[in-house]
Image 1: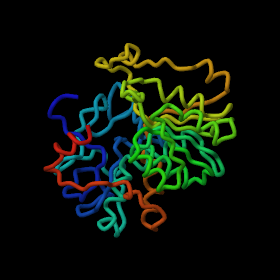
Image 2 (image 1 turned 180 degrees about the vertical axis):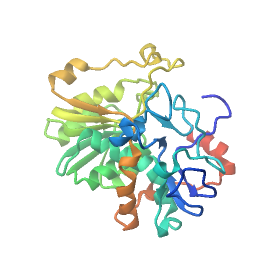
Image 3 (image 1 turned 90 degrees about the vertical axis):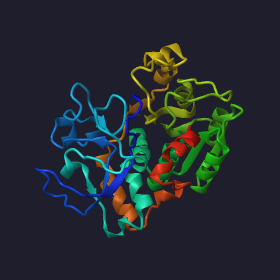
Image 4 (image 1 turned 135 degrees about the horizontal axis):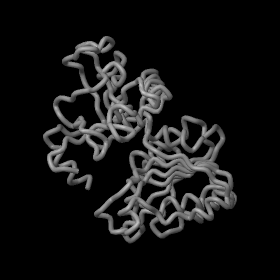
Length: 314
């Protein structure tokens, strides 16, 4: 990440200017944008896989705002943002969008990503689900599992404040600080493991000693998802991370328990959310007061205080 790069995935605002070739979107429209950029006409976009657009980032599949390796696009933590392929990428928001701005902004990334985790894992009504990570993605994954009718949602983390938020959702919070999370999940599922598992931590996950262990949650999922169960992985993993302490992670690799994974007949789905596939129906749920993802917001700060917020975040 080069210093000075504009960050920002959660993009929402008012259209102030429209370029040539944009017909549907008008000045004054309030819109929300997927964090990933699609052209709308390539083979992947036509299949609903806009997160892997073949047009916007030549030589790679997928482009995004303010992210390393995903094109030259600046992020949305700025006063103004240029939107490529505006007609395709802009989700026009309904009349109540100003009063529900903190809900609709979640459609840019965090809510569809949590929902995508349920899709990758194949969550169905009545399923038991284990989620590793109670950060914003994991909490939205728990929220989405409840939307899909999961009978039992377990959220594993070591941060007590985050686990309290999971409990507010009606999920079973499992504190893995002392390393008993696997045993607890198995106890809650009669020794079989959950029907579905979601990885919402990524390669920078840490053990209880705050040491980075990139393979930790993936291998815990293999142990806590039942035989023939399915795992969805939305936590970020990178093709390479030269500054990682773990030698394998530097080359984008993991010491993965593939033998156990294979022996249990499990399956796995991975990758970033194709936000365009989800943001319109999720928007309808917000509009009709069926969901309120803004419950996750803890602080509201002006853009001028972003540096301070990043220090606290880190």
